[in-house]
Amino acid sequence: MSRYLFYCESTFKSNIKITLRKKEQQPKRFKKKKNVYDVDSYDATFAITKAILRLVGLRITRDDSTFTRLLWNIFYWFEFGNLFVVTWLELINMAKTARGGSFQDAVEIFRMMPCVGYLLLAMAKSYKMVYQRPVYENLVNELRSMWPRGEVSDEEHQIISSALRHLNYVIQAMGHETPLILPFFYWFPFDPFQRGYYEVILAAQTWHGLITIWFMLCGDLLFCIFLSHITTQFDLLAVRIRRLVYVPVDKQLVHTYPLGEYCQGYAQKNKDIIDTFTDKDWETRHQRDLSEIIERHRALIRLSGDVEHLFSFALLVNFFNSSIIICFCGFCCVIVEKWNEMVYKSFMTTALSQTWLLCWYGQRLLESSEGLSDALYESGWYRASQKIKSSVLIMLHRAQKDVHVTTYGFSIISLASYTTIIKTSWSYFTLLLNIYKK
Image (tube, rainbow, N blue to C red; front, side, top):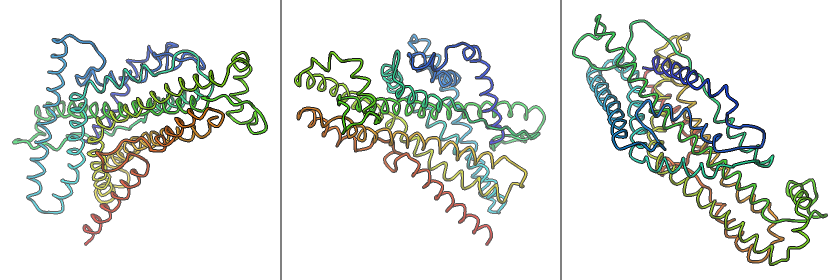
């Protein structure tokens, strides 16, 4: 399976690049010109994901008619049913192989385990997208409404452009071809390598591999994109918090500090406001701005909760599956494969990379949400009225409680959980290796 998974994935990415080449050649990309953004740059981040979703019969944020949606749903359930049936075929073959009891039979089961795990994981991720489609669409639309429009400051531009660069990063996978093999270890009541049978089965299994890849990519890409946009909004909110209160530049706040640089520029552009505003005017303005900041903070916490609700179970299965796959692939790399064969080495590398990517975006969510408390402390709160200080203190306490996504409540998605997965896989691997040596 792994040979064709990587081959099909690389082929599919090439086809997607060819399809979108015309759009990429146009000046309309994630950003049109420096410091200027619009909703088109946000929509562009979902372009590849929506193209993949269409291939598996899923269309989000599309106002289709009832009949059109019915046809797309039939197409999706047809593909889902294919994977459901072949998963049972693999499990039947594993059960028949386990009856042998020999070491060679155990090796065959180890080779089947990654395939079964990915089939189950792909179905779990895609079903969640169908069952919770309104929540997915709300995430896309509400984050779209938060996306900056028009010219932004250099600091905000740096945050947005950095997030978009990370989304543009694509991991290229290498394919590996071998003659007369089947990617999946299905059970058949006949010899699948006979002429005529082999070609049909190979075409069907290749299609099953493509469906599995598309289901996996849909879930992982949406998770990364949603968290990227949410963390970007947290970072932009931190910038807004630091600029909440105007502080005059003096010996206490020198002009070389970030807050000093902003306040100095603000004083030059808004000299009339600074000269005419009374303490009551400043309090009214601060109260209005702080209310908007709190509402945005609550919205981001709610959207993060939606992501948690949508992906937590799939992430739990993903992390458990990754621990087993890394262990079995490591065993096959050491015992089964020769040093110059790359099938299971590539499989293990991909599993490590995919898990790391999910954990990295989870870590970014932790850091960006915790950064709000630092931004509140670094703002000019000490120049505000007592009422504003009290509100800032309440928000500071809430901001110190990080926002995160968990694996169904078992562990927080972060780089620390990635380390735990590696340790667990290594423990399983060493145990399996010691049993084999004995």
